[in-house]
Length: 242
Image 1 (spheres, rainbow, N blue to C red):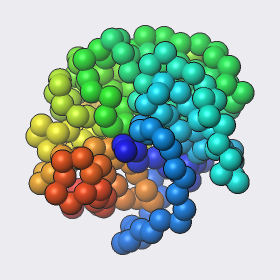
Image 2 (tube, rainbow, N blue to C red):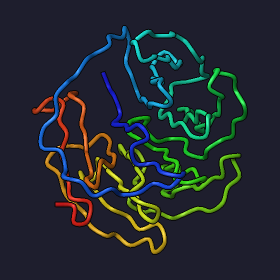
Image 3 (cartoon, one colour):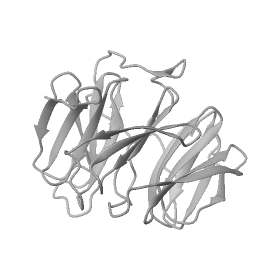
Image 4 (cartoon, helix red, strand yellow):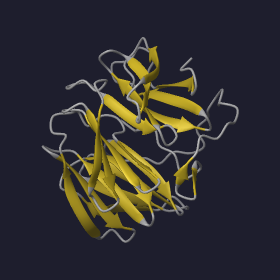
């Protein structure tokens, strides 16, 4: 089972992502679990519902009482990421090319557009929303696309850290940088969106799968497939990568 690291809306205040300084987590425990009969790719929580992207080309919706609406949204291909923003669901869809599809909270499609990535693996977070901008990794062309919420391309940011045919994930780290993980080499990097500078880089012993920000810390995760440690989460300092 593959699940990308996701957060609810704890860091989104007034449509602005903020890095909140609190003590990083030292341990985690499972509070509850919900069984699925197929693989999971991604999830997000929004206004009392959890939306789960599933390998069978669908999105399930789970309410506060753990009631599941299976096949809440049928998709043309496997979902890579789900993000919720302003009562809309933004879904990155695997394919050649990828697509970004937008749905309302009733599951009705509102719009879609092609995203040029065509050869990258589906593994790992590749879409994030900050303010009213969508950041999407284009691993095939080693760049980050920035879209408006309506799908208009605002800018393209070259990012040589993204090597084609590797596992790449990306998450927002404040308004001016992103955290990028790669499998070749096995690294976690903070990348400045304005200057394209590498702010820090941390090498890992095993391949990272995905990353997210959590109260001023960077959480990097790995599924249990071909990993000697099984499923793991590593906590890095946001400012230094240590």
